[in-house]
Length: 135
Image (cartoon, rainbow, N blue to C red; front, side, top):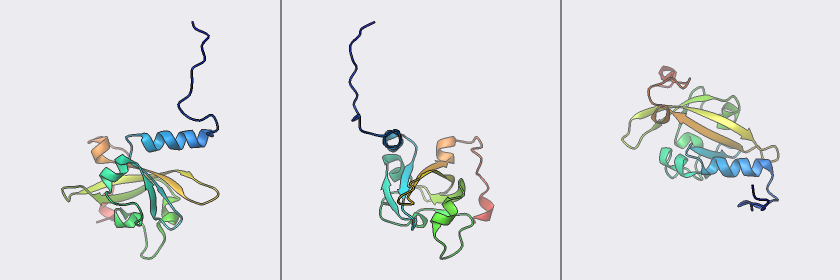
């Protein structure tokens, strides 16, 4: 075994949270950062494939959220994760999804959101396919 030091690709100053965020945003799972008002402020490539051109727009522009009352901020609902939702696929079909708030940033109130849907899970039950309430 060599005693050579292996260099890190990431700066040593990164905190575990910053490293986690970096890895999540590089992952194949659709992830986004939402501000307190429910506006998408940052996305990864996978999220853009699910909700194209969503950055700078409210989450509700791309997703129909179960239980969201008209005028209520989506941030209140996303706090109780997972949340059932629907979105339109590129073909126009409604796709059931589960929105998971993975982390809430204490200073800003922003949330890291992960989308799990039937296109990713296939026919197996991912725990959220109760879409009748949404239609």
